[in-house]
Image (cartoon, rainbow, N blue to C red; front, side, top):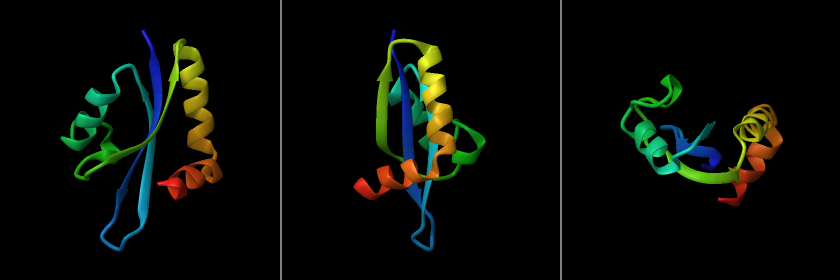
Amino acid sequence: MYFYVYLICTKTKNGKLISYVGYTNNIQNRLSLHNSSKGARFTRGRCWKLLYKKKFSLKSNALKYEYVLKKDRNMRELIKKKY
């Protein structure tokens, strides 16, 4: 089984990009949960697009990378600028 760290993005009414970072073992199912307002509370009521994902074989490594990506705003901004 593989684990994924992902970054999803949405636009606000004023055109600003908002991002969310999470981890999962089923990326398609998790994205559909976010878009159907059944994901994390922060993501409810918005339409999300997957911008980035990274695959890990160990859950512990995925959780460590998720923590790094959540805290590193510069890395998140670079990923958003690519797309």
